[in-house]
Amino acid sequence: MEHFDRLKSRIIVEEHSLTNVTTGHPEERNVLKLDFFKKNFKINVLSLDESRIVFELINIEFSFVNALRRVLLSEVPTMAFDRIVILNNTSVLQDEILAQRIGLCPVKVDPDLFTERTEGTEPSEKDALEFKLHIKCEKGGKRESDRRDVTTADFVWVPLGDQANMFVEGEEPCLVDVESPIVLTKLLPGQEVDLIAQCFKSNGGDHAKFQPVATAWYKPLPQIVLKRRIAGEAARRLQSCFSPGVIDIHVENGEEVARVANPRLDTISRNVFKYDDLSDSVELSMAKDHFIFTVESTGILSPVDLVKRAIRILITKAQRMLHELNKFEDAS
Amino acid sequence: MEGAERKIAKVPSSDDSCVTFILNDETHTIGQPLHMLINNQPEVEFAGYSVPHILEKKINFRIQTKSQDHLAVDSLRQGLSDFERFWRHADATFDNAVQRFSNSTTH
Image (cartoon, rainbow over all chains, first blue to last red; front, side, top):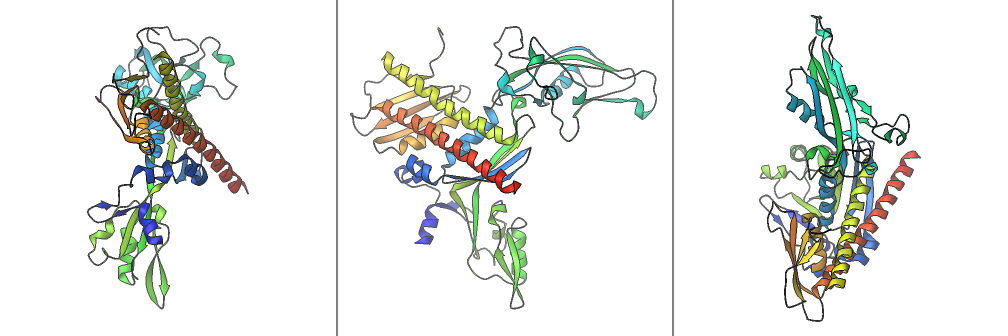
């Protein structure tokens, strides 16, 4: 019955179709039952560094995993440049192009310290962050080295109101360095850029520049089962059909035999169906309730912080609606 | 606030067991999981949602229950409450997972 159980929880990947996709009657979906979820839901962090986290979620419904991804992309708020006052720009880039480039640079500050700005009000210390950029390239030089790049490192933070006291020294708002400062424009001798740039708080759903993730994505856990022994040249060919590390070759009685090593690395490319003699040798499937989730940060928030904020937003969503429902009931 | 759209509105109906709710400022993010959760409830005959127009950020969520005794709004409430509890549990599980990972890598 192990095969049957495995079938129930897996989508079979065939050459031209996916089968076993329907998840059965909703009442049978264990992962939607809170008790089952509380007992069986697991998260394992597979890797974690300053910019990226990879973790797996086991025994969860895909629509929940997708909800997490959607919130990470479009509902976790950040601060980004939204208003630029250009005092002087004699660089080769037009004002609006320069402004657009500046808008896309991530601003490293905790968005929780700010509120969203109300349309029509003056920006204040509670909802805005101001930076000044004033670079002049000295006149007269004729060499390559007399030119100057204007980068994100040239921005100077201008504290508004009481903001100077809000931040610990060394942790003031700044622009994110992606390996090195981002080049915004290049100046020739005599050219100048002088502008004031203000950041406001919003989310990715409003404009992509507010997105806190470089991206976030998930994939269902792939499973590969070899239905028969594959040896020799066919084994090498099978290995080439999958991502590196998925299939490895070991020597058995002087022959090279293929073996499934790490199916997690696979991208479910179905390349194996290219070869007629290998099409029937492999059973490819994907789990319906086991996902590998990756979050890459743009540098504003740590990956762990991002996931936690996204979960918090999902919880608050439900709470707000429950609150509304209760008001509804009282009114009617 | 006067004139502000309610978060949850209801299409008028005479039957409280078959109701279409309008969830303002919501998308598939909550629609899909909610619909899966509510369909899982044994008293629910039908639960589904749609986005009436892609340029307007709202969803129509319809719930029909199997008998007059079960109100659609109760199913919605149960669904939302379960959604919240799922994510609270996931929050705690995630914290543990990160803790376990940093413990295992520092040793």
